[in-house]
Length: 262
Image (cartoon, rainbow, N blue to C red; front, side, top):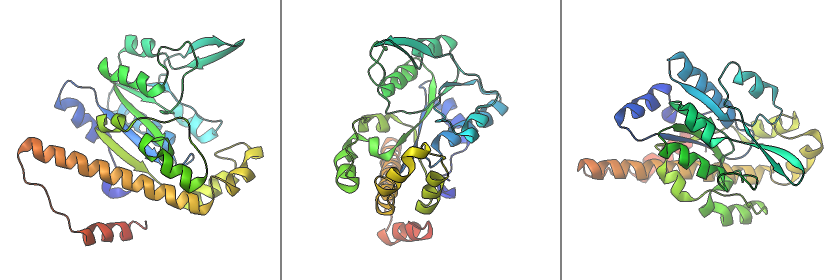
C-alpha cells in the first residue's frame, strides 16, 4: 500500500504535466519484489486512461502473476523489440517505437534492468531518460536495493551484492518518488503463496533475502530514501520561490513514523 499522507493521485501528476513542457517522472520504490509496485503502476494507468490521458505500457513484467496480468487488461502495449543474442531471441522495450507513438505517459517496469547486448542503451534507466528527453512522461518502479548509493549498505545488511543499480542522479530527476509498502509478514505470506517467485525458489528466499530482519531493514531504507527525496524537493522549491526553509522538529517526524508503524 501507499501511506495516505503521501498517496499520489492521477490529478497530482496531471497538474505537474500542465506546469511546463518538461516531461514528468514518477518513481515507485519498494523494499523488495512483491510489495505491489507494478500493480500500482497499472492501476495508475487505468485511472489516467479514464480521464482521457494518452497512456501506454512500454514495458511491464508480470512475472507470471495472474493478478498483474489481468490488470493490464485493455491498456495499449507498444510491441517489444526482438534481439538475437547467442542463438536466443530476447525481447526488450522498443524505445524508438514508444517515441514514434508519442504518448503523454509511458509505463516502464524493472527500471534497474540491464538490456541485452545489441540494445540501444546498456541500461533501462537510460531508455527512460531518452523518453523523457523526447517529451514522454514516465511512471516507473525500482526496489530500494538497486539504488547505487545504498548498494554497500544493502550488501552488509542482507549478505547479497546487487549488481544492477541506478544512479542517485536519476532519482533527483524525478518529480515524484513514492514508497509502495506492505508489512514484512504480508510480504512473506505473498512469497509462500507463490505470488513473487516460482515454487522451487520460495524456501531459499525465505531463509535468505526475505528474512524478517532483512525486510525490516529494507523497509526502513525505502522510507528514509523517500523522506530525504521529499525534503530535498521541498528545499529546492522554497529556494526557487525565495521562501524561508521550514523547520520541522524531530519529535514531529518521529511521531509520524510511530503513527505509520515504522
